[in-house]
Image (tube, rainbow, N blue to C red; front, side, top):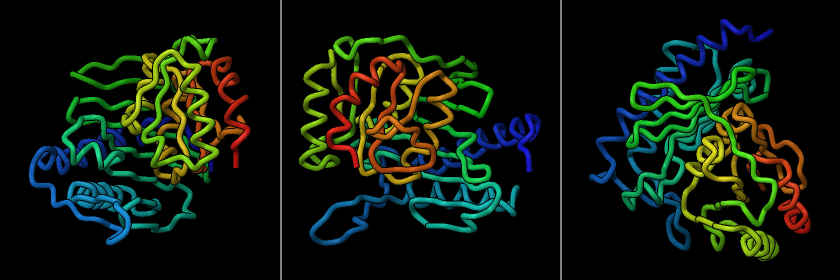
Length: 271
């Protein structure tokens, strides 16, 4: 079934409602008693809070109420009809470590697949009052402080002029991957770590130029694809192929020339 502009506009408005529903759960628990647990138990650390779980429950409940035929894939509660025509892909808090540290760089990632492809996505930071939204064929925009602002990546043709980011080099990259990141970082002008998916939003907003990650799941990246591409940027794997709904190794860039320079190094450890 074709996705008409009218239907996409309706789903875009619903995406804003989903962000507000999740924010209503998360914000009272930020910098408060958030019920921290370790999902992996002894020998590893993968934090989860009641904010993660409660926000996903709230999002799922609203989807079930308004679009009961839609599927859902979420980090906390798994898959429900993942082969449906429309499937929502959820990461209620991307950056739980930042959340438990009280740092406002965590985000809520919500994507919508239509026939298997991400066509709508948002990166929400409710503590800052921001929702970065992108939709197929309609560009990207920032909703903040009651205003709507178009998003556009900035030109950055040289890696030596770039501001780049990754979440956690030592924790996310293997030996070969870490070597590639280290080389790209040595070339770039400025590098930041620990920003999680908020860095994706900054590429779309034109304040950063390149984000490099590895080991991603679908819910870590799908929401960013419409936002970045709608702002004129690119989302690829480390071989330079469009990443679409896939996780794994990822590069987000605002300028093709800057990305191509980084890919010379990243391809050496591409999987």
